[in-house]
Length: 358
Image (tube, rainbow, N blue to C red; front, side, top):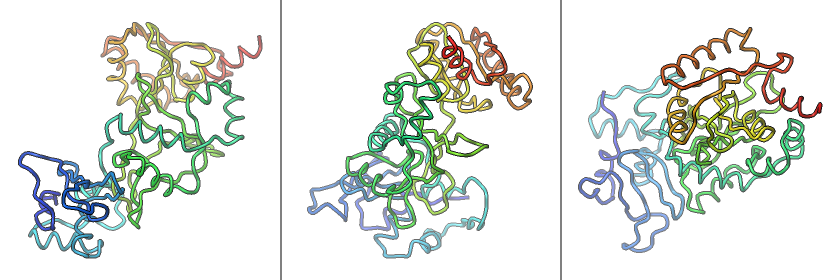
């Protein structure tokens, strides 16, 4: 099955052809460039997207074609299929599939941008937000100090003004395409996916870069933690899904503790000074192997696992623990397991209780 590519559409539009061998090039932006010498519109033939960092105009293949031809966006796909004489079946309405090839080309399934791009966008986003008093009290009651809260960058999720926030980020020159949580809505404006109110928790790599944001949602009993993600939004363009990134709290040392949950890792590190890495979930080990290899290269000698104590009786957690052990053995990582009084499920709860009892 063929797919529609940016390189197929550009020759149909009043745009210069790409230089030979170039997968990304610049052309005059019809929105903000006033002379022929100005060329701020970036056209990416590899990612099938376009963006002007000067005015923020951006989108996918269908958006570009719709603008220059005045074709209603809903009819662009059929028109391109007819012009290019392609045999491409229409996506099924109401399908729960991850996305067809055309969906992905239209921006809803882009791969995550480079870590430096994600970090810049997330860091700027967090600097624009504040932490609500109830969220701050919750974090303090779990053992974090005000200094640690400020350093780690926790903020309350924005419930209004998401378009304005995205606009300001674009105006500051930041890239939002490929950054999970950001997408273009039905009006073509960049915005942020709305979740239930909660706390943004930065998930950082060994260099301190923010890979993604988790949300600790208020007043829920199930799936309390979710990623900030713009995957699967039918009306979006340039949306992107989050991945199960591994969080590191503290500098790399010979002994590292492995725990479930970035916030728990931050709390244990703050209370003990130990270096802690965190899985986003007991069965989310996709990125753990590469992370452990990088930590080993930086001086890690052995790992101590510290899953919640319900791994002793919860089959789901137990299976995750067994998969983890199998991975550690394949990687030849020296490891041990911390156990504590099971009246405290998480290591963070146990350590905080012991410290406040003394």
